[in-house]
Image 1 (cartoon, rainbow, N blue to C red):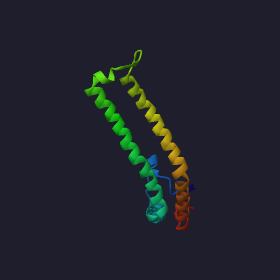
Image 2: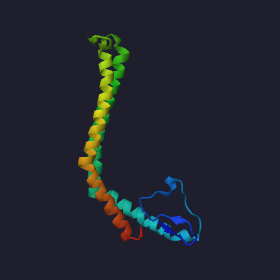
Image 3: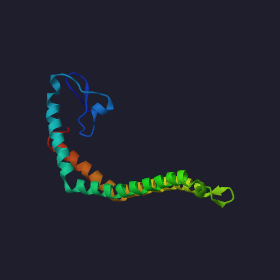
Image 4: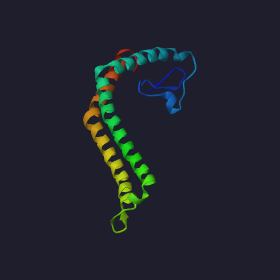
Length: 149
């Protein structure tokens, strides 16, 4: 964070999104240099996006999330459709007052927690380290081009 000549605070971190945080953009002639930095920052992001390391991280994400979403939505829709179209099947007792519909409903909660655990584990083991290295590389590239002081 630096103070500009006008006294307002300016963020030089290329990962800081001033508009999203509600700070907005300062208007004035002192802001001509950051727009040049923004162009360099955009080039850095495009270069990172085109890199093989980024594509690998993105591919690992998609290879996990795609099948997981399809499997979970299929399981959820199958539960709803079965509960709607075959109430007799769902009302079939399993043990005492517990019926098949109750077990399937509890299975929805269980699979939600299991899928969350699997996603976090997959991210930690297969993507987080590579994504962090990409972030550091992008920051170094931005600093090398005058993007951050």
